[in-house]
Image 1 (tube, one colour):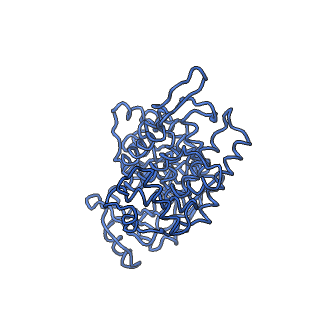
Image 2 (cartoon, rainbow, N blue to C red):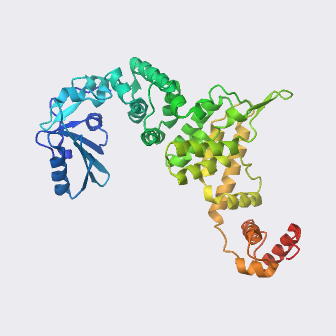
Image 3 (cartoon, rainbow, N blue to C red):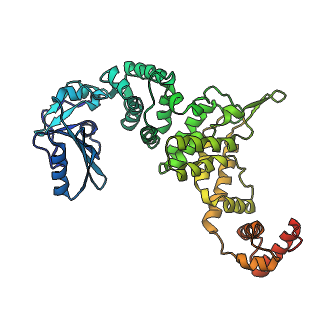
Length: 441
């Protein structure tokens, strides 16, 4: 990448432009890179007055973020405009920012102000800290470094990397605190939603940040597997995430997190079979679901997202069906997490290239996945042939768990085409009740 430092920059797209304001931060960076700008930050003399005037002009919402510090926000559609009071001269303000490419400003007349040589770093696709003190003053900036590098495909320069490692070590040893988990979640989610999510979390691991924020996953480093796997557990998890992102760009946060964390319990469930020279990870799916839920709730994700991701992890080891009937049963039992579960299973398998993996085994796996997808497309959930009240009458049951169990049996029998008529449903239920030993049925 190479482009000349502009003598004047067109900022008309950010109208209304404060007469004596300065456009700062990521908006300047993205404008110079030709990227879409959705977060606009202005340094102005009177933040409240500028914010209210802009909101009135645009018909937008306006509210204070920090009245004491003079920080106001205007929101219209998906565009956010922040107005921040300029407490000192401009250059000292820019000197307090995180990275040189975020320490540029554009005046209301379109003049680029660049005291930290951020434009040169833009040319060289380099992310460089303004100072070590600035990173230490807000450790969230360590995560932000990885996030920005992922989003715009820049490299973090060596001295900045070294400082990040040192500050991360200080966090691990409790010499520097952890930012609010809500803020941590926002940065990790932004990394997760990039096209380079796998590489982003790999960078977190290499910089020591994974140990700070996701120690359960960091523990997977150097945990060997063998069998279908050619990578250690951490390497495989990162590769699976990247496989998911590349194969399913529309994958949402829950699925992406589930894919990253699907083997998170392997370190604590690992055993070794000396007679077969083989590693086992019995129960890692069930324990992994518990850890996934715990991790995502710690990051202040919603209970709904945490539960869904945990469920994907819980069932990622299911055996795929070998015939159409088994595929119908699989689709019926896991319809609430399909097709996401299949996407996770595909990413998991595509990230495995160990000694037991072969083109033939991968092809067989793909065919089994395709069978389930085909069944899902052609077989919507059938309408129940009998209601709960009718089941109670037929089997002489009182309200209770047995009724639900009978209804679930009937629903699956319909889904796999064992039952297609009312008479068949009644006969199947009577045989089921007899087999359950329900003497009153």
